[in-house]
Image (cartoon, rainbow, N blue to C red; front, side, top):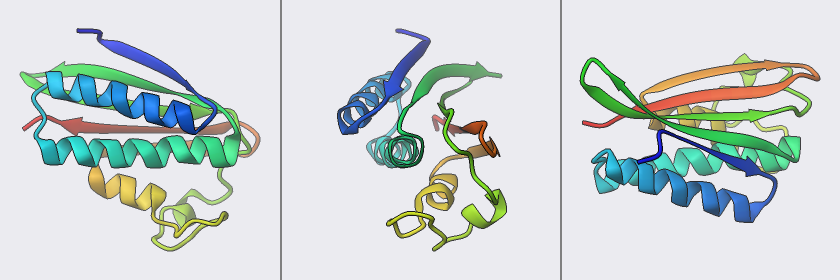
Length: 133
């Protein structure tokens, strides 16, 4: 089983591909069908943000094992314009695009751990983790 998978994100086709890669890894970790859906949904949101706001970036999928607990870490990274106000971007309903503003806050709710860093002109990195139960 591959421990780290990197997928360049530039288009809708890449979003589909990274979802498939994550599904394979998550299944190998023994995630439930409902958790597979949560992971796929969160991953879609992160990849969609890359395509819509930065144009391109990458998603890194990593398997982790900490103290006997196994999980999947997803890092979504881009070199886009960055997020002006992270606190505001994390509020339900806030969107600078055409979306409903559920992407980042929804992703935070779907996953067990969530970290975000962004700087104007420096891009955005979001790291999320889902632990197998």
